[in-house]
Every structure is written in C-alpha cells, then in structure tokens.
Image 1 (tube, rainbow, N blue to C red):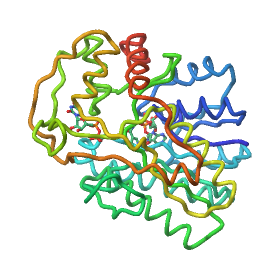
Image 2 (cartoon, protein in one colour):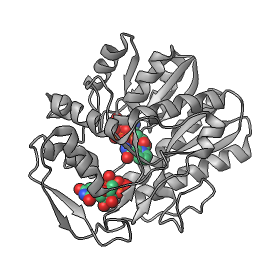
Image 3 (cartoon, rainbow, N blue to C red):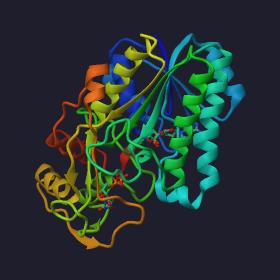
Length: 337
Ligand code: NAD
Ligand code: UDP
C-alpha cells in the first residue's frame, strides 16, 4: 500500500517511516522541513535499505497536495505535520492555528477530492488537560490550556464532525503520551532546532556537554518525589502503534481514538537517574520553580489499544534512555554533524 506521511522527516515521522518500509509499504513523504532535516530521510534509507519518495512542501498548499495525490495511488495518510512547542504556541497563536488546524483542513479537503478517506492523526495526551484521576482512559473529558493543545482538540473535533457528515471516512485519532528514545541504530533521533522544551532532549544535551545543567521544574508536586510524573514511551513503540492503527483502518472502523502510552509514570528525578546510568556520568540539575501550565502527573490507561489494535509498548525505561544516549552521543549536533 502507498502511505502518504506528512511531517515524515520529523522525529516521530522518521521512525514511523522506518517501520512502514520494513513492513513493505510504499512511502511518500511530504514535509516543509520547518523542523526537520532531509538527512533524516537518507538515514531512514540507510537503516531500511529501501527507498522512499520525498516532496518538500507545505500541507497548506492545495496545488502542491493535488500534485502529490495525482502522482501516487495513495491509500492512507498519516498526518504528523504540525508545530508542537507549547510556549511558542502561546506567543504565536495565529501561526499555530494556521499551521495545525488550517493545515489539517486543507489536507482533508484534498483527501476528499481524491477519495482517499483513511487518516491517522497525531493527537496528544495534552487534550486531557489536568485529569481528575489516573490512569487516563480515552473517555475522559477533554480540555486545553494553550493554543497548541487547543489546535489538537480543534482538529479532533473537526475530524469527528467530518466522520459524522460522511461515514465512509476511517479516522484514527492517536493520543500520544511522552515520546522519547531513538532508533537502535543511533542514526535517527530527536533533533530540536533550538533550546529543547522537552525533558529528554534537554537531559541528553546536558549529558553530551552542550548545556551546563537541567532545571527541574518544581519539586513540590503531589507525586512520590515531588517532581512531575509522565508516561514516557519509546518512539519505536509509538511508530509501531501507527502500523497497527493503519491495519485497524482497513477494517472500516469509522472514527476511533486511542491512547498510545505505556501505562507507567516516571518522575523527572527518576528520568535523570536512569539517564545517568545510561551515560555513566552525573547530570547536573537544579530545582527551579514550576513551569506554567504543567500538571503534576499524567499516564495512560493503555488497555484499549491492546484490545482493539493488538498493540502495546514493549521497550523499557532502560531502552529509552540507552537509545537516547546512543543517538545523542553519536550525533552531538543532531543532523548537522
Ligand atoms: P517534529 O517537529 O519532529 O515533526 C513534525 C514535522 O512536520 C517536521 O518535520 C516539520 O518540518 C513538519 N511540518 C510542520 N508543519 C508543516 C507543514 N505546514 N507542512 C509540511 N510539513 C510540516 O515533531 P514530532 O515530535 O515528530 O511530532 C509529530 C506530530 O506528533 C506533531 O503533530 C505533534 O504535535 C504530535 N505530537 C508530538 C508529541 C511529542 O512530544 N513529540 C506529543 C504528542 C503529539
Ligand atoms: N521538565 C523539567 N525540566 C525541563 C523540561 C521538562 O523539569 O527542562 C519536566 C516538566 O515539568 C514535566 C516533565 O519534565 O514534569 C516532562 O516535560 P516535557 O516538556 O518533556 O513533556 P510535557 O510537559 O509535555 O508532558
């Protein structure tokens, strides 16, 4: 099957493309490279010994999308393309809504035009806001506290409306918890453009000597050690979840929604200590004040994906930190090395 992967040069996209190629799919990637390097794609080809088709362009560009859909017999679309920095979304809400919401609308319009109606959408656990209890099941109420989260929620609602209006669509809304880690080859991984916002790339950059120390945002949360707890999931497990979602779409399920998480929460301090074991050096850190908008704890109930997608995470915390370190130590400056 030919799968169109928007944002396929990015962190989760590139890992998913590896799994798609390994399963024998034809892969067409569309990415504007606003937060990615084309080197990731040559590394994907190196890992899989298979070739892919790449178009540099924007999901907001209708004529460009029409060309891609004309040139290829696209069966399904995995839509990763989006902007993802929470803080930046607060400063630049219009850019985030335009890119994430209008971008998805444009993609869906063109899919409709070409009668391609199988879509996997990258949503996020952020749509659960501050959950009233844990673990989080898919039927929990949704809310958003920043434009990034709002854009994910808006798209989720748009996709639901689209399905209500035309139930020949098959749509999987995948709510990712916290993707970390890298491909075991050490050839692809997360390569933030700027100062990392997320915990794991920040720790990796401290370990490799690019940053002096980590700030731990708050140690007075109501968690076992006072620091924030999250459900970290290995990016290869996450990538494989997309293949299972595609299989599900082939059974004509309509609109479906799944948590992709492990069900296990780790604190910031636990992540630091696990990483120290992996890199065999101390990670200097200081306790700082809480980051605005952060919640104490968040982890998934992953049972629905197990039952309906036959998917569950298999990588351990050690796999996550070891693979992150393997990638970062082999590529201290990411793809620009
Ligand atoms: P990423 O930035 O590495 O990948 C996104 C890719 O989309 C990049 O390669 C970027 O160049 C491309 N892109 C952005 N806007 C585009 C546009 N208008 N047209 C074409 N290409 C465009 O991010 P990622 O971590 O791989 O995330 C992928 C998706 O998963 C995003 O939608 C993100 O919001 C979502 N998500 C990520 C996380 C996370 O923590 N990484 C968590 C939950 C959800
Ligand atoms: N965090 C931290 N220092 C950092 C980045 C993150 O202490 O430099 C904490 C953050 O407060 C949260 C956890 O690490 O408790 C995960 O944060 P991340 O930004 O990676 O994911 P999200 O907040 O989106 O779940």
